[in-house]
Image (cartoon, rainbow, N blue to C red):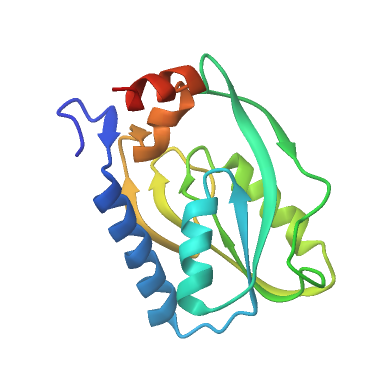
Length: 173
């Protein structure tokens, strides 16, 4: 649900899963055949997992981080993992890169440039749920464009500040 001021988008678990399924359908409708999925951790892990299961393709993981300042709301320096985790073999062939959103687009653009420099990758396409209006990068597949570039409150954010003691308190009678 987008707030009236256009600055915040609140997404429930049900909406989140439906958006991932709609992303899968967009990729499927394109007719593009791919060999592997690479998701960006952490935001792309849930969409990447679902797409990996739906398309029955191996899932690789690449860790990136750029949200550090002010409780994770301001973009800081981009850090990209040196290695990509794969179940077996190497990242190669036709690869679908998956993340949750193209916010500024800086992370996706940098990862795409790095992956395109890898000779084992013959074709690369990208898929996200949301593309913000301020993004400098437009993925090949996306579900929603957000012209006002709101802050997206995803359903799993409740865990960002939940610590074990608070979780324990939740289940104590």
